[in-house]
Amino acid sequence: MKQVKPDVSAVPARHLLAVATATAFLLLAGCAVSPAYETPTAAAPQTFKEAAGWQPAVPADTLERGPWWTLFGDAQLNQLADSIDISNQNVAEAVASYEQARALVREQRASLFPTVSLTGSGARSGGGGEQQTNNNFKAAIGASWEPDIWGRLRAGVTGADASAAASAADLAAARLSAQGELATNYFSLRQSDAQIALLNATIDGYKRVLDITSNRFNSGIAAKSDLLQAQTQLANAQIDLSSQTRARAQLEHAIAILLGRAPSDFSLAVAPWTLTVPEVPLGVPSTLLQRRPDIAAAERRVAVANEQIGIARSAYYPSLNLTGSYGSGASKVGDLFNASSSLWSLGVSAAQTLFNAGATTASVDAAKAGHEAAVARYRQTVLSAFGAVEDQLSATRALAEQLALRQQASAAADQVEQQMLNRYNAGQVGYTDVVTAQVTALSARRSLVQAQADRQTTAVALIQSLGGGWHTPQPQ
Image (cartoon, rainbow, N blue to C red):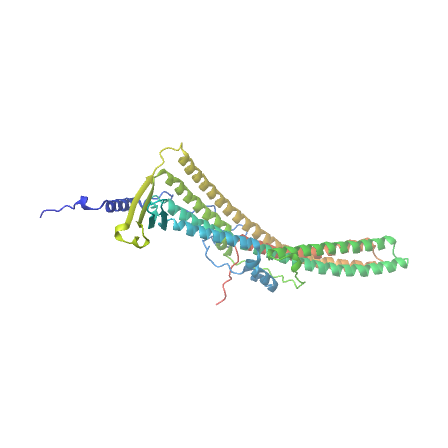
């Protein structure tokens, strides 16, 4: 059978151009200049040194953190923390940055598609005398498209996606930071309430002792130095009360600012202090460490830097742009849509930089250096995170041990104070012994309150170091 060859000359030139362009695009579409992304490695211990028995670390960045502050069992704290998202201006800024990053992703994705435009014009010209007036009307629809042959546009989209993910992690970090600072300030305020109550009770006791000492002095039983010492003790306690009252006011102002409110419009009434300190379940630290938002943000920024290498490399290759338009021109508006007045055009353009004195190579090298810097920051973030967890675990264990000792010391100091007062009233010891016992007892009581607050604030810091809260499994 005789083979019949197609008559290429019979094919319109514009069809040949379209076929050639499509063929070239299909051959080159698989080309990509971005390096294959690999999550950077970092030194991660299997267990924590300061907490034996915890499980090896496993990725768990998608687990629900939940409202971790509810673990402390304080209704007032729950109410305050719930309003952080809608009131704190730092969180609001992070939300806006995240929305901006998402919009950039949409903008980058739009660059993968053709741009279509509609144009129209009308002109009327003429001259003096018997010259004829001319009308010229045009309408056209056109399109332009830059095929992503080398993957530059796709790299931009991938980088924008990674940037948006990093912004989402920054938002989570901003929330966690604000929530943690609120909880810490709240517990410090409740500690101030307890210290103020303790000082008020101490001042009442010192006033009674001063009355007794004054009566003894007036009766000639006690020396004037006893009276002066009692007055000094009372004045010092009153000074401490004033300082503690000021500290409470400052904490209240800080909480108001965290909630996005003016300090003058916000107040927290004195309330009972809930001393609950949640226990960290076994295995949780290794799991939650992978969910720290700052680690997630650092890793996503490595991905962004990786795509920047591809974008820089694409400058080594030619750029291609396709254009096309279809329209019509006529002297009358009604004739614009007649076939005889139609106009069309197809075009393709390519550009290649031949010499730029090494600027492209420098840009690629800069992108590679930026990637290495991002990897180093990621690894440092991971190391710092593990260090922070170890610090808080060590502090948690030490404070638990100290609390029991503080309780014993406070109880013993209270007994010594009462015994010295009794012996002083019986004339068995001098007032200096009473003062010493009172100072020791007050210091022990205040140290006990401080230890109780430190346990709660350390628990908050540990939760922050772990990237958020956790859910304890419910019994079956």
